[in-house]
Figure (cartoon, rainbow, N blue to C red):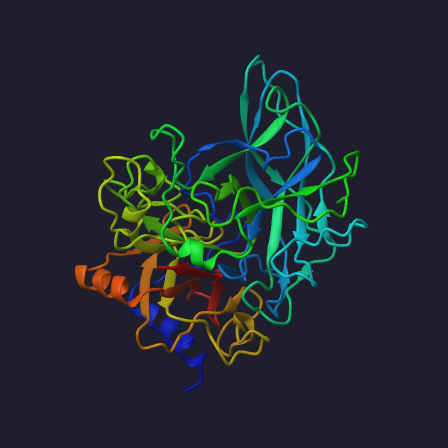
Length: 446
């Protein structure tokens, strides 16, 4: 059987679940969801407190594949983004600060690190200088900023192979030199368990697989820049804060990405005492960015603790034994109340036309080429995989969860490392041929 034939069968099966009607389509950006379930642990500049610096979030190809596809590219191999949502803190609110938004490509000579060549060849884009919003505060002011950007004229082309660290991309904020923390701008951060801070500080006790899977050595990094009206990297290597493998040093920026492609992120629901964003909601909330609750971050969101491995860390005092559940969140603002197919498998698709084995949806017979978006990159024939059907809510969100049995948790504890891959498809059966819009693939390490 063709590895792509099951995809057509999945879409056809959705006919048995629900029907949808044709409607006018508006071009609305999706916030992909990396910070949909997120809490702030502290404010940080990655250690570059007084110098010009780009503070970057690492979006690793080990975890996120085909997440930023350009909907206008039928080959599914170009990346294009249209904005960011970022949360920053100005230490003295009434004195406005300036910043830029920036994207770096992967270093071709050192995959897993941003390309920091001093001529700027590794910088995919940088905005002009932006001002923080007005504030009357004489103390610290927090700004939640959503900024649309003109897509770079040249889309970022995906690499021809997706190895363990290939195809990484780095997005972040350019900060000016100053006297922080007395004054200046910094980024809000979520962090792993930190034994030397009050236990009431939001901190996400990450599952055991992060330490084994992480390369580069942290989820964020900094790049020294020249400053000025249009900063360039100085050419110094990127710095990854903290010590690799040390608890409390893993951190993630409060930065999300906007694209015209659907968002897909893994979700973990935990019972942590001091990371409330990770907990299941008492009842579904359509208005919530994570309708059923849970964290979508790069800590427990990608690295859950299914069988209380964190008990050996130790966790904060009085914490209950961990027994996380895993799931997936799809966001497609352009297709509310639509059929959604979510697939959980134990590996990627192989046999597709792209070099990594994936296949552009627009090139699969039976699917509309003009409206279909993204690549099929999840294994569709894995007999141990699970397929979920549902309907997104009025905000275009659909969340599904897997509640683990005691037997499954015991098996995973005995078996050791297991990685699962998620992908979602938003399907419109009212078009002929059928339109399908694919999220990227996300690998969750159990």
